[in-house]
Image (cartoon, rainbow, N blue to C red; front, top):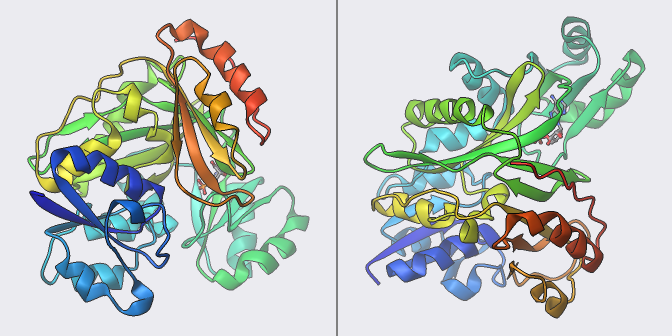
Amino acid sequence: MDKTIGIFGGGQLGRMMAQAALPLNIQCTFFEASESCPSAILGPVFSPEKQQLNAFINSADVFSLEFENTPLAQVDELTQSKNIHPPRQALAIAQNRLLEKNLFKQLDIPVAPFSAVSSLQDLEKATQDLGLPIVLKTATGGYDGKGQFVLRSVDDIAQAWAELGPAQSLIAESFVHFSREVSIIAVRGQNGDVKTWPLAENHHHHGILSHSIVPAPNSTALQPIAEQYISTLLQHLDYVGVLTLELFVTENGLYANEMAPRVHNSGHWSIEGAVCSQFENHVRAVAGLPLGSTEVIKPTVMVNIIGRHPNIADVLALKGAHLHLYNKTEREGRKLGHITLMPTDERELPALCHALAQILPEPLSLTTDMSW
Ligand code: AMP
C-alpha cells in the first residue's frame, strides 16, 4: 500500500471511501466504537472506548472523517502530529447550526431568517420577530430531523420549549415554503482545484432520505447558483475534500439549509453515475492526488434501503440496478444499503422506479417527474 488514510467513524460512508481507496493502493483505518461496523471488513478498527486514539493516530499518514459529530478534542489531539482534511474549522461550524447559518449569511448565501434561542423569552420573541410558523432546532447534535419542533401557533410555544429547551442552545428559523429539496456536492483538492457534481433532488420519508434523482429535474438554471455558493464556502474554509450543501428550492430562489463536511447519502449515485465518484474524489483530495471528472455518465435514481432488506435476486433482476449493502442488521429507520438505477435508456427510469417500489419492503413514494 502506498498510503494510509485514517477515518473518524466506520459506517457505510467509511466503507465506500475505503472501497474507492483500494484500487489506488490506499489503505484505510477507522476510529469507531463498534468492532462489527460496516467499514471493519476493509481495514483495522481502533476503538475510542478502549482508549485507542493514539494507536489510531499512529496507524495512518493523513486523516479524514465520515462522522460529522467527531469530537473536536480528538481532532485537536490528532493535529498535533498529523493533518486532517476537511479542516477543523469546517467541522466545528457544521456541528453548530448557529455558526453555520451565520457563516452562510456572512458569505451572502441566502438563508431563512433565524435567531438564536436560549430562553423561553427568546423563543417568544422569535415567534414575534420571525412570524409563525417557525422551526425550532437544537444548535448541536440533531440529525435526520431529530431535535426539531415546528411551531404553527403561539399555543405550541410551551410544548416546544418543554421538548427542546433543555438543549439550551437553539436556533429558530422561519419556515421555508419550498417546492423541493436539493443538494450540491463538490470537492476541493489540495491545489485549490474545485469540481462539482450536478444537483440531486432529494425526497425524504419520516425525516430520512428515501431517494435522490440526479441530475435534479429542471435544474439547469439553479446549478450555477448552487455551484457558486458551494465554491464560496470551499474557498472561505480553505477546504480539502468533499463538501455537501443542502438547499431548499423556493419561489425566491435557493435557500441554504445546512452543510455536511463529508461525503453524503445524496451522492451515492456517483459510484456508477459519474466518471469519478464522491468517494474516490474525496480519497484523491485527502491523499493530495489530482481530482477526477465529476461528469455524469447517465441520469440515475438512488433509492435507500431502510429498515428491512429486500429480496436481493428481485433487485438484481431489474435492468440497470446496482445494489450496495452495508452489512448491517435490520432495525426500523436504519439505512441498510442503497440501489442505484442507471438504465442505458433514461426514459426507462420511471417504470424501473415503479418496479423497485413493489420490491422494497418499506413503502416508497417515488415521484415520476423526471424531465431533464
Ligand atoms: P435538517 O435537520 O435541518 O436537515 O432538517 C430536516 C428536514 O426538516 C429538512 O430536510 C426539511 O425537510 C425540514 N426543514 C428544516 N428546516 C426547515 C425550515 N426552516 N423550513 C421548512 N422545513 C425545514
